[in-house]
Length: 162
Image 1 (cartoon, helix red, strand yellow):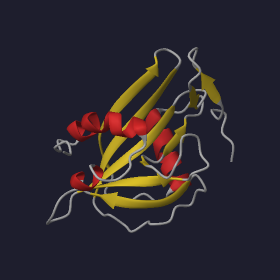
Image 2 (cartoon, one colour):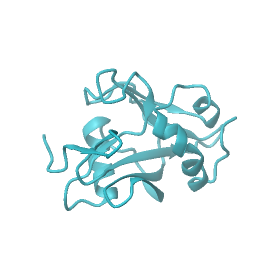
Image 3 (spheres, one colour):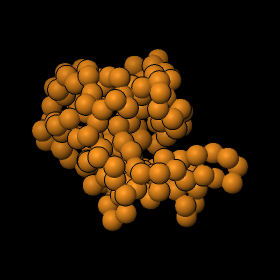
Image 4 (cartoon, helix red, strand yellow):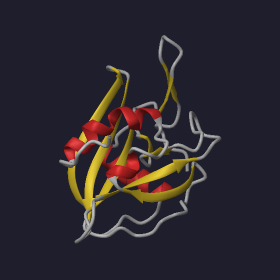
């Protein structure tokens, strides 16, 4: 279903950003009883804007009267499916790529369970999976996610991958 925030914002330098009112996504962390924390990412389909099969945070365009949190939850439901149990918001990171015109807010949350998603509900993603911090250093991350990763991990009080 097309939202009222769907559309492109074009920067003066030619860059394009999806989401007339900005965009938001949801980064989930699960901390098992034993072993390292895991983070849920989605593998972008090759056909989407700057896709190329890289791993990213599930998210998308915000609608006009939608908070970043509400947009992130809606996008997760549309792209991945049911949210895991025990959702606790940790904080947000805002990438203000075009100050006053466009930003991407990553909403970060802990969850009590880590369901196996593997496939997604959206044609925008080919897969979804959980990764440790060490894994994040080895998988091909979507450029903006790679840049934001140290800030996101700091919100979770997790070490940056080497």
